[in-house]
Structure formats: C-alpha cells, structure tokens
Length: 256
Length: 362
Ligand SMILES: Nc1ncnc2c1ncn2[C@@H]1O[C@H](COP(=O)(O)OP(=O)(O)OP(=O)(O)O)[C@@H](O)[C@H]1O
Ligand SMILES: [Mg+2]
Image (cartoon, rainbow over all chains, first blue to last red; front, side, top):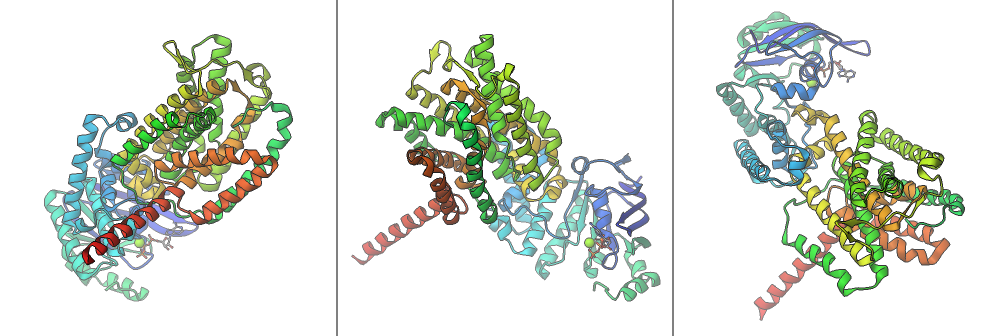
C-alpha cells in the first residue's frame, strides 16, 4: 500500500479546471517528482493534499486513512509537511524561532504550563532551541539564527522554510519549487538535504522546474498538463515521452 | 474612567466617542508593520523596573499619584490581555471593554446582592468574562480584519445596551453602588496605597505570565498566525483554537481588571465600559508598541497620566489629547518604548565610544 494515494481528484476555480480527475500514488520512502508547464495544476494538487484547499470531488488517502475533508493542521499532525511556492516564512520572527515553531506539534504543554514556565517547559524549550540550531546548521543558516526572517535574502528564506518543514519530522514532505530563486551552491545544499531524506525514510513529493535537479533526485516522475496527468514513470522514460515533449513545446515554457 | 453621575453624561459621552475615533482613524492610516524584533528572556532590567514600581509610592506619597497609578495599573492589565490578541496574534478587538464590564458587574452583583466576598467574586468575574468570550469568540473569530473589528465593536455596543436596559439586574444607567473594598483573608485594601500595591502586584504577576507565554511555543504560534495562517496550519498549529484561547485569556485579564476596578471605585455603571475604555486600551497597545510585553504597560502609564493632566483643561482636554496622540503616533510609529530604547541605546553607545576615544588620545 502506498503512503499517499490520490483518486480521481478534481478541482475547479470559477470554471477553470485546475485539476481533472487526477489519480496517482506516492510510495513510502521514495522521492517523487511532479512537473508540468505553468498553470498545469501542480500547486493546486499540493494545496489539496496539504488541506489549504478542498477538492470538488475525489479522494485522498494517507496511510490508508481518508483525509479528504480533514483540516490542514490535522493533516500535518498525521505527518504531512510542506513548503510553499512563494515563500511563507514568518517575517515577524527570528530565523531560529521559525524553525522552533515548526516543532509546534511535538512540544507538549497547556497554556498555563507555559505561562507559569514549569520546569519541564524550561527543558523542552531548551532542547527545541538546540535541535533548531542543528537543523539551521545543516542548511547553512546557523550564522543568521538570531536575525529576523524577513531580513534574509529570498533563497535563504526558501531554505529556512524547508528547515521549518523538516522540524516537524514529517513522513511525507511536499516541496513546491524549492529550488527557484536559489543560487547554484544553495541548490546543491538542497539536493543534498533531499537525498538525505531518503535515508531517513522521509517520503518526498517535489514540484520543480529545475529539470536537472528533479531528474537527478526523483525515483519517479509524474507530468501534469492542463490539469490532467499525462505521463508517469521513471525519469529517463518520461524524458523521452513524446506526449510530454509536445506539452512542453506547445506551451513554449519548458522549464529548462 | 471617572465615575460621574451617569445621567447628564449621556450626551457628552457620544461626543467624546467621536473624538476618540479621530486618532483611531489616523492611526489606521499610519500604523506601521507592528512586528518588531525583540529579546524575550528576562533581564536584570526587569528587576529595576519592578523595583521602581515598588518604591515609587513610598518616595512619592501623594494619594492622587497613588490613585492615578491604580487606574494606570488597571488599564495595564486590560492592555496586556489585548496586546496578546492584537500585538501577537495580529487580530483586532474593539469590544474588549465589554469583558471589563462583565467582570465589574459580576463582582458588583455578587458582592452587593448575594453577600459574596470580593475575593470569591473576583474569580467568578474571571470565569464569567472568559465564558462569554468563549461563546462569542467561537463564531466571531472566523472573521478577519475589518469584519472582526466591526463584529467586536458591535458586541461591545450590544453589551452596553443590554446593561442599560436590564434595569433589574444591573441598575440601568445609574448602575450599582456600594461595592465593598477588595479584601483577602480579612485584610482590606482600603487606602490608595494598599490598592496601589494590590494592582501593581497583579500587573507584575500577569506580566510575567504573559512574557513566559510569548517566549514559548505559544508565542511563536501566535506570531505565526499573525504572519501567515496557511503556513501556521501547515506545521500543525490549530489556528482557530489558538485564536480562541488567546481571546479568552485576554477576556479573563479584562474580567479580573473589571472586578478590581469595581471594588476600587465601589460602583459599576455602563458609562465606564464603552468605547471610552476600548479606544484608550487599543491606543495603549499600539502606542506602547505591538508585539512587545512592556509596550502595553508603558502605554497604559503614559496615557493614563496624559488623561489625568489634561482633565484640568476641561472642554479643551479631548482635542489636546487627540492632537498629542496623533503627534506621538507620527513621531513614534512603532510605539514609544521601542523607538526611545533605540535612541537611548544609541546615545549611550555613542557616549561610551567617545569616552574611549578621548581616553585613547590622552
Ligand atoms: N486561487 C485561485 N483562484 C482562481 N484560479 C486559480 C487559483 N489557483 C490556481 N488557479 C488556476 O488554476 C490553474 C492551475 O494553477 P496552479 O497554481 O496549480 O499551477 P502550477 O502548475 O502550480 O503553475 P506554476 O508552475 O506557474 O506554479 C491555473 O490556471 C491558475 O490560474
Ligand atoms: Mg505552482
């Protein structure tokens, strides 16, 4: 049984079919890529999986549970983490606080135990800080841990957003164009982190225009075009698929 | 927050609302991005402030000073609760005074009619204000921005109308008189000085509580909700629930303040729980600096003194008050606390460096 399975998912925005009966599966422990021209419906699919939007019809199963109508925060509690195409770091917090806020679900305690700063809160906050710094270190952001997140350059904010998602310890990680806006060395760092996730057993579902990168990291690739799934398979097969070539050519926006 | 006889004041009250609305409107135009970087640990500085608050009434033994500071403390409790909701969670409430009123009336009714001690009534007030906040908050907090502002404003006004109309329960526009002094275990807070220590003790406690909240997981979640709700729920923060929690907490603070206020003024009447309170506390939060915990307390002290000093000029007091507020907002758009701090730190730094340079030369 796959970790995530999507069945006949359809979503319309004011008459535009952003997704048209899309079905696909993501196997546990694998890295799956999702590509397609601009406006193909990739981000929409991620919004539906993470619960930012609800589908018009169809079903989403995660760990064999029907999560189609679950609230977004409940899905993250089940283990779905994500990043956004346009960065959504919290600019009103410091870098390290952004990552610590990603641990929200894992830190326990009621409002009163926090207000009274009970002994176990003190230790759990300290540990959270330590762990957050480790995550920042692995992303090369430790030098900036105390600055406000909004002061980071765009690429660093994207990495920070990844760090925040990692801090959740998710089972399934949805990455929406993580490499856009990153410098070459940052992309390298990103690929490294993603390959690492495979070893840790985190399943990654990644939307990316940077072809070199998806082809390299992904085990399998799905292709969306005008809301429809037009191809799915191993990277080398997809690359040679004539339907895919055509879709990219007619839209004139091959992301490479 | 003066308790004049209510009848003649009715018409004046409306006019006054308009004067308060002007700065509020200007503020909506120039209010900056409120989220500021702040250090969140307790520092030695906190102890100095605590010492200053503790010693001030002993060196300055004027009862009028004590009384104004008591009012400032009550405002500070209100503003603290509101600042968690506004300055941290980024929501708006213009009905906060209603919870203040609920606290005051609960205490007034329980002590004068049912013979409860003020101490018991205090807890009942906190509970009733929180309970109402819970019931109101569940539907209302789904709204955002202006709609939330309007809904909370409406709630506040409805509360006032209900208080004025249900004469049997609340005494209508005249209100309830003869509320006993606050007392704990036979110790009665019957002088301004004792009340000063009572109120500022409570402020200190709530201050520490709030500061602990904002430096923990909860504070981060609040700031996250303020900045991006989608991102907040993507890491598992239950956005509606955390908004509700903090709204109820703010209401609990307000209920507590209302109960203490009723005991200190010994009356509760509708005039004191309308926009005339809401607008000042919103101003205190904004002027003090959003997203800080010192801000609301500093704002409360400043504005209470300003109102007290200006009350000498009678009919000119409100226009002058508005102008001063507007000027403050123009020159200290991020709140008085932050900007002054930065300036002073800069000056100290400059002075220290200059001295070092001079010494080097010598
Ligand atoms: N909130 C919305 N309201 C209306 N239409 C929308 C909305 N979100 C997406 N759409 C439309 O749905 C279609 C799919 O959009 P989506 O953002 O999923 O594309 P995408 O594959 O992520 O493209 P890109 O590569 O540009 O990010 C587009 O035609 C878009 O205009
Ligand atoms: Mg997209």
